[in-house]
Image 1: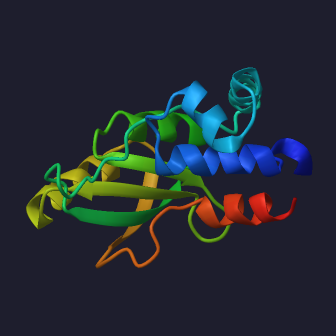
Image 2: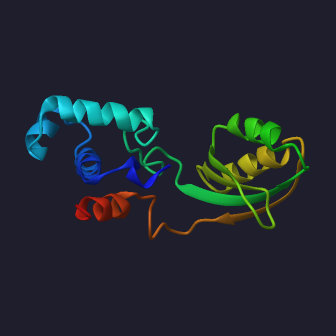
Length: 159
């Protein structure tokens, strides 16, 4: 993605929608001091470039009953990444899978209701064909949650 993928106005618009995701295009235009068509064109362009993936609600997994988060490094059979990833995607509690460099081949974030439930999820992960070895750690807390705000704020200041 090029450096110009998000300019100052884009960043201000994304910050506005991050803080108030239910705002309409007209209200965004009013708050940003630009035309409604400008906001709509920016949103369309950001979506077309893949910067803006949608407006899903922010969900608290712990409040939904999944209070335990764990991470696992998986070593898999060479050349089987797509098949293993597809099998992991079929496990509801697997939230993310990243292909990585280093000792592990895949880095997996998963959730569970409690330790017994985590054992069940790990058993499902280990049971995926071509998973050779795993190393799992339980998250005790999340001092820095997933975020993009600092990047948007830096871009918004660069005007």
